[in-house]
Length: 152
Image 1 (cartoon, rainbow, N blue to C red):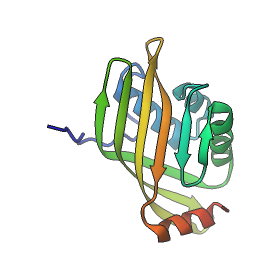
Image 2: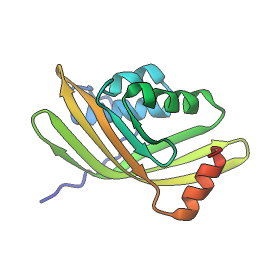
Image 3: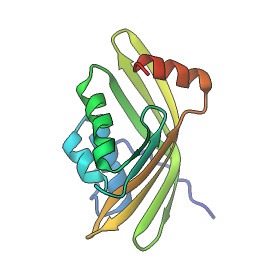
Image 4: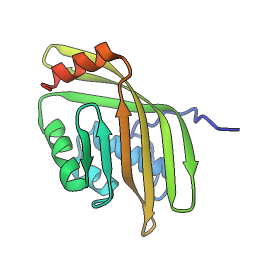
């Protein structure tokens, strides 16, 4: 039986990054608090890939970091929560697949977000490091509004 986890991940959880749920919490803590240093520690520096509606496909932390730096350093505020997810864990790899809900705000523009999300982490020296993220917005009108709001 596939277990759907009942508790959303917000980033406020007190969990160690040495566990899968702790690594996820660390990511959302970094994202929701605009913490680029913590975000950098969450990703594997060399073998990571990001694929999302705003960043396209970016390979390696050197290509991914500018996306987060722009978002965290700009006037827009984005907060997301991960929910309705399954977790698939192996010895040195885990995958989560679920949804994000959140809010984008910039000036007088506010958009409620609904994103399908998957993340893959690899255990490196006892610590989970993110190696892949895929996010997609299935509602074309929402995607158009969101891309226009961020200037894409």
